[in-house]
Image (cartoon, rainbow, N blue to C red):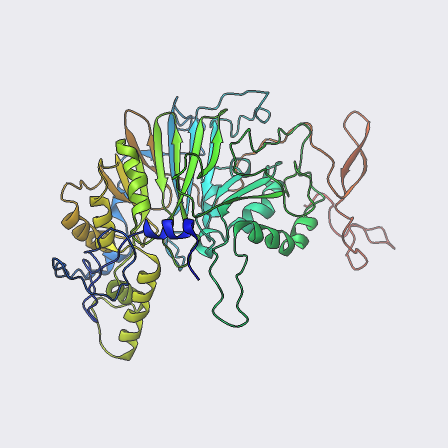
Length: 539
């Protein structure tokens, strides 16, 4: 059966992979000779043109180099998001701010959460016709977006004083757990943390890949189906919190027209369309890439001036996408996870105009990845070593762009981005040093720290027409919740009872007892002696 026309066009626009497979010598420049072109060449096919360079061995030899990332630690510009006197908190006119809240490939580690970036544009100007009520705790941005939300990132969002109300637009590049697992936390705890409006989730349409096992079928593995089943799976959780308010009067519900969406924003499940527990999928046709003007627009909001488009990339299974965000002459690309491919290159070239910030994944070469997984500082031999290298090779071949491939891809982007950022990477002094060797081979004009960096959690980029400034965020490790503002016109919770307000008026209030059986509770007062067992004020 032939491929659908659109599917075939997208496939033909992907990268041509070309790698040398050396059983024990895949190192810093391994897979470095990737070439872009039409069609897909299997990674185990040999290049027949110019020989790929011999890999330059780059092995960690100092344990200290594996446990620190000096570049980030030594950034001179500091950012204090919890200090209201920090002048950097307020966005400048026409500024785009990018914060890395997660930057790691699985498995998650203490130093880095899994993948997530937060993008804000500004400054914020209150418009009662189109925007929520003014809120001084988060009203400094005109619009804000979460791109991917992997495991562990919510701790960083909270430490950065980023409220759930600013995290209501989630853009997923694909549905791997390391890019979406904290969606559960954002959704379930959002209303209790100040997000009194729906959670909007953008992501790819179903892959269309057929199940190879009988009976043959095609799974509905797209974003809408994921949201539908997630809503069902989290029913007990959301109901249990529904004695708290989760909506307010007068929420300006968006529409397909007002947000420039590819479909009407309709919640899954039975939640009201203005409620904090409304989960709204915006499914994107992953095959689209702008061949027809406007066919790949995910979001185009005239009120805030932000336009976001998408394009297909190559990662594990059909259905992975990257995004480009444009705002007042500034532009950012986030590719998510991908092998080297031409859609990212073409998007970064941007019709000859280039982009300001190009964020692309970078992976370890299989040999070095195997060394790290086996806690070695030199290549080894034997069945376990061979099996680990082979496994890492299959992961790279299906999914990622190692050092040399990343460098070659950037060499094809002209004009170069103002700043290229490698992410989804095990950032440390030793891995970054190895990566720079490979990248310099393909990109001799690379200037470390100026036009190229490797990301790390809590790295902040302040992007304006004049400059791109890098910051290290200074945040509390033992902080509590971000500041929130509670609207005065909250709707009654789903589980409510009658109460009295401060003026003596009868009002609907949350009923914390509506869903529990208190027959075995130890009471505040002894029912026989009426002695105090414990104070009802918590002390």
